[in-house]
Length: 468
Image (tube, rainbow, N blue to C red; front, side):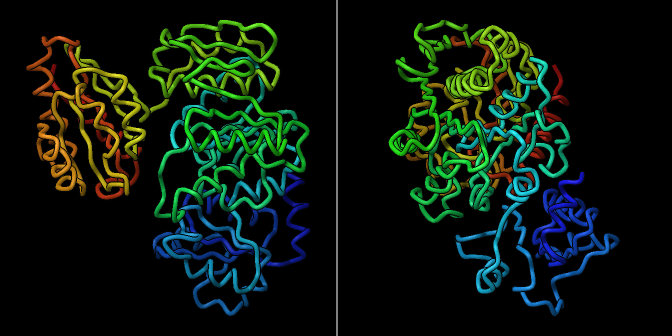
């Protein structure tokens, strides 16, 4: 595209340093290199460096360039910017006073006039982002999906200037966006997560809050904020007080005099003078549970702000297939559901899943977060048995011992699936329904798997191999 070539010309021959050669880093290298930029790359993993050996790029290690020579540093969001301590490449860039950005910020600088929806929050980002994309597509709009989900943003086809680009934005990415602010910003919820990377909850919230700051290039400047928790309530109050954007309030806890809300299981639109009852969210299988009601309400508000009618939004919402690894029904055997909620990487996400089911045979564990399983005590009545996996096994065993709950140390996922299946099938005639074998780990996956997707895929494979 001419915009990319034009942007590279503004660099005046200065090289770009790309550190971290995951999928997004490689997309930056390919995009800028094709447009004629000089690229220097670095990565702590030697195998990653081998992936660019035929791409005519310079390697940081052993390079004699001064850091001040670089136009900027494109940093992989997975590399520590501030906590637990800044990576050495970050310190060197800061000493040289060069900007540190991510691919989303670069996208904005190349395509400042493209219309964007940005979704952030602790939980529900992927579902909400995908749901917004799905509805826009079903309603005949040109739309692209990317960011922290799916295709890297620089690989999206944004040649249509009237198209919408819907982006999932993590706190790590937002921390690397000094100027990008979406046209329509969505804040879903905030609970303690990634505290090891942000230092404390206050800084985590401050990074998330940046998404509702004023966009200097937007004619929209809309914020959709669900204020169901104390942290998003603060963001909502500040956005209203400072008149940063046109703010739409969302709630699943109370009716609103101006906004979109859920009461019982019904979605209501009170954006205009009259309240409109939109539909029963419990009738949509892919949007089961209060957390998905929050996602649906936020998505609905975004589409209304874009100009899509409520009838069209509701019809498209009813065709949403759901998202793998987010309470995704893998299989039903003799009435027992086998549900993949591998995206549940913290206790708050697990709480959402546990609150949707009765007679739960819960597979939990992995590399635990700081909060452990605290806060999940209210779901004890839903549990039939718990199966522990991964690094957290002994710590979680101690936690369950404290409350006198039954569990089995399985250590690995294959054994956990087999034992949960056997127990669930034996007990399926009990009151409360046949039950559910639920993988909702409340932990990161990296102790035994490449990613939460890898963990979920293996769960599905084990489940599909079970005999009826």
